[in-house]
Each structure stands twice: as C-alpha cells, then as structure tokens.
Length: 156
Image (cartoon, rainbow, N blue to C red; front, side):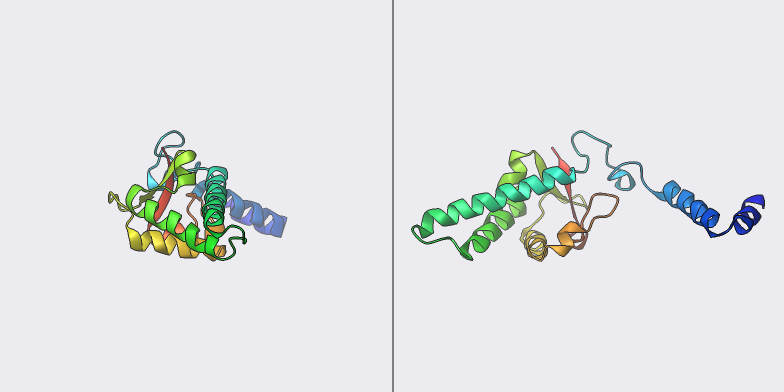
C-alpha cells in the first residue's frame, strides 16, 4: 500500500519509476530467451551486427555478379534482381544467403520445419527490400520481416 500512496504523493516521476521497474521485470535478459533459445553459442539469436554485415556482403556480391554481365555499362537495377535471386534461392533450400554462410548465421523457421521454403524466403526478401520491416526489432532479435514470415536468424 505504501508504494501506491508513496508514488502518488511523490508526484509523476515516482510513478514513472515504478512503471519502468515493472517493464524491466517483463523484459527478457537476452535475445531469444522467450523463445527458449540459449543466451549465446550455436542456436542463439544472431547479433544485429552480423545480420547487417551479411546483408552488405550479399549486396556487394549481387553488384559484382551483375557487373560481370553488364560491362562496360553500370549494373543499374539488375543488381536488385540478382540480389533477390541470391537471397531467395539459398534461403529457401539451405537457410542462408552467401553473406550469412560467410558469417555463420542462418534463417530457421519458428515452427521447427526443416526448410524455410520459397514463399517465406520471397516474403522475407520483399520486406527487406522495403527496409522499414527489416530494421524494426523486438526483444527476441526478430524484425517485422522475420515475424511476418515465421522465421528467426540464428548462430551456427
């Protein structure tokens, strides 16, 4: 009872402090804890830095591949198509893009199925292309495109 009266008498700052304490109690201690993932090591949620680095590797690879076929002109928009192919096909069947494989992370389905599949991989790719769904994260380390496709990126 004192806590309720104290926060009322102490003013709005004390009430905000109590709300923050309650929010901290509900917050998981590490990414993926609520999903039953380990804190670190294989099978834990991939760190955001590795995910971003893998994305950059894939973009550079797509540009280089496209550039090899469009010389002497610049690759232009064809790089986007190449990126789509090198993202969707490997994730569908192997669970990782070339950049993800290089950094030892992979995409897994939340429901435990063996393959991500072409529809989920294409959905992830299209939503990544839109950027906003790929950069808004929750405490489990899953962005909107992961949640909408029922996937998560894990360490190997």
